[in-house]
Image (cartoon, rainbow, N blue to C red; front, side, top):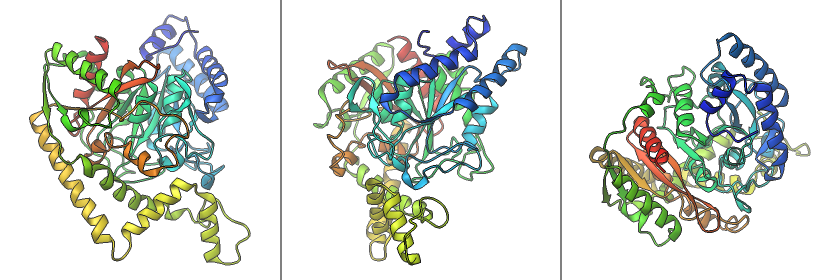
Length: 475
């Protein structure tokens, strides 16, 4: 069976009876087995996926199937699916069975998607290489000695290696866009508050957002159309009406004013082949009639420190519930309550999670709260205001996704500072809460995927979809 790059392709073959959902699911199961060594899946949902396929096939036969009928999708292992294990790739939650489904899972199933399994990720979504997972490192299908990116590395590789048509990830500071860039996918992070976070295991609540990894812009648009919108279970979700993102693809994009963030493109840390590919893409935007200007963003050096102060503070608070008493891993030899807390958390969490909890606890502690946390909140406001001002004058901002293509497994993981600085281009959209997309730009001379990042105004996903679609269609 061939590789399908869009749901439209699959729907066409299902409609003409060239394909059944049983056959499609069997194909993806075979692909998962064939690529087992890449370590993308923490668990394959053989039984529930087959049952769902049976239900959806009967709906297809009688013409009552939903928008996502034919879409086989994987979900990151921090998204709850009732009666299925969810672990956030941590020993702390090993074998924990979700008592309810997240809003995003309910919405997928309501439109007849088939959820094929849970995907490996950095532990509690903390990491940029998928090397911090309790279940081991995810390998990049383009070069198995290299990382898949993180934290949604399993989601990116599952789509890259054709183990499912699409995948859900979560993006706190680039965790959908960076692995998409490393694996040659389309990684879409919507505006903060566009999609409900109910039932998604929290890392940093004012940053976390569910995103998509797909092979086509059309599938990303359709998924957002299904997943977005108000939810009574999440007070941070916007009640702004959800437009038809799929119609935005058919509409003419119109001529846009595109601003290139000068400091990101001309940075010394940016890989030269990535820079060349982005400059070539910029020329293509110009050739398509868009106005392209260079603008300055002089707060670049403050992005990573601000992001890590705020997210570690929120992580420290969010992860305090994993104490060996409420739920999660419990040490069975502790002789006192204090020892139980200490031992359970020390043994249940991995090194990177512990590092971030300690950092966050420090910046929230008496005497340091004003110096770090409050100051970082003020800087975040400055960053957001500057981004909003730039997007009042321009329709889209352009920057790289990551300073380099996928690096080798083990190359950077021992140096947290190097790992954190790799987020320099993705955290801008996260701090400002704006939508952003990583688009593939082909491969470098080593065969590693290259990428470009587009960002737009709050709740202006339509512009990103229409521009991305026209850009890739003409590629």
